[in-house]
Image (tube, rainbow, N blue to C red; front, side, top):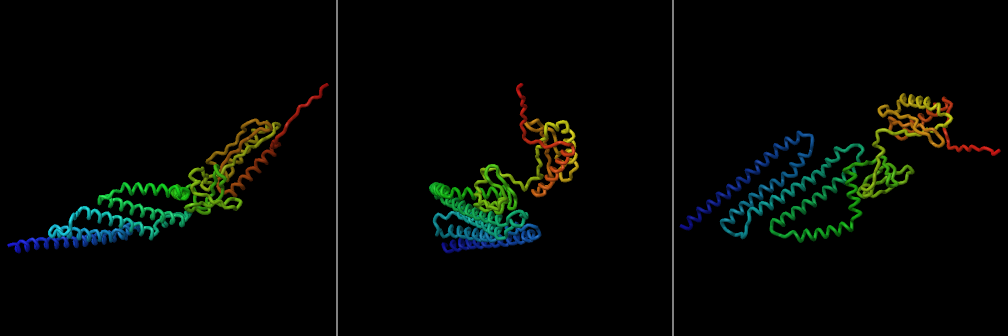
Length: 357
């Protein structure tokens, strides 16, 4: 009788095991079919990102199904033979899921970095080397973070206290942070430049806070190299840019003519005609931006002159072309002054001396 009961139970267990294996194989076939359909769709899209996602998670999903099947088989056998103590199906499945999910994400990051898709959408002004370095460092840091988080989750799941580990990590992080304070400061300064884009390689920058003025030659993770007008090279730590004002002259829309023309007091009656003539030549000049209306006014009586302000914007923002336009405007103003028989004032002192009789 006992042999008969054992035979029935064994047959029942065998059927369950076979069904579990069949369901595992079925889910593998379904997964492969779904992946095949999605692969066909992804090949028709313009982006390669969906191909990378499918490639990265295909193998982990396969292992996930296989391991889930094996774990369930083990649980069924253990229920019959009782050869494993404290077998917790939920904990093991959770562990497998966490490990394979982390593996899939890391595989995705590796494939994304390998394909270098981030280099396909950069503009001609961007430095490919800086962008590549940025993504590589970001991906490495992200991988480390994923691994640390995975280990902490599993430790917590298996009842291990992570309070001491976190405290030790906090102290260690503080020591490392203090030792590498300047290095980290420059690193995050480089990140700020990369993401905020206050300037790029080839642009002219200057800072009113520091003696910085020149063309950006390169942007690294620790230093930014600027070539000055005197052809000297400035090596500027990236952390400096987080505390100073940076003016990017390359991105200006126009250059400005801002001059004060001082005439003699003897020519005061001629100023209305001179102002009118200057307005005419500016309003008819094709090199002057007419959307920003030129400003020409008699503004003040000074100690030795009657001052006229000439304020206008040029269409060009190129420095050499601007100087040519400004030069022509100043010569035309000089001709107008001469035509009206006036003269430019210069500092003078008049002494009214009377001889005592």
